[in-house]
Length: 221
Ligand code: DX5
Ligand code: ZN
Image 1 (tube, rainbow, N blue to C red):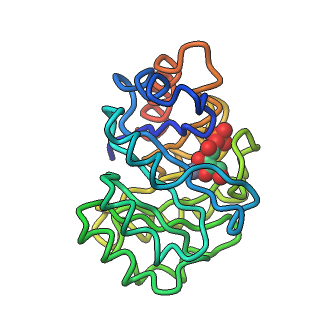
Image 2: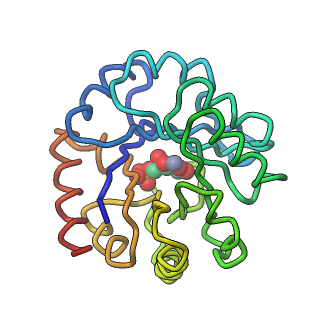
């Protein structure tokens, strides 16, 4: 299981996005881009025009996390805009199989996200349609929240389901990941870690990424 780190630019300085992306370009695997519409979540961030610009300005592939209503309508456009990965929420998608297939057909990895209260077993049959399963470890909407330990059993269950289905689906966790929590999430079976405040709140974001990766590697081995 290869450990990957995806820093969330939600905690970066939005007026200096290219510089903030460059700060982790040598250490991170992805750049996590939180798209929020003030409907699916009570916060508003950024959309397609910024993703298009960021793709040209940043060296890292973009990991777009759509916290929006009607992702069926919008997700393929993020893939077409050059995102390397596009994740839609199970709670918002009306036709997840069609939408995941459209994301793949535009050349991106297809992700499915589950909020803390959404059970993973209901989506087990969809794993062949998915490149990455994202388990939220906070209620989505804001950076800097406390990691919810109540999600740990679901991370373990998701790891079982993924290993049982061939093991190629990445298991991402997002929310409250820090040097205090990443080991618990890695031990439970996560392999892709989003971190916003733990990376961009640090004096040296690249060193923070390296330290998180090392902790996760040790905990997962
Ligand atoms: C929350 C977002 C997260 C957020 C994580 O809804 O999906 O990606 O940026 O921030 P931290 O790591 O600070 O919890
Ligand atoms: Zn996110």
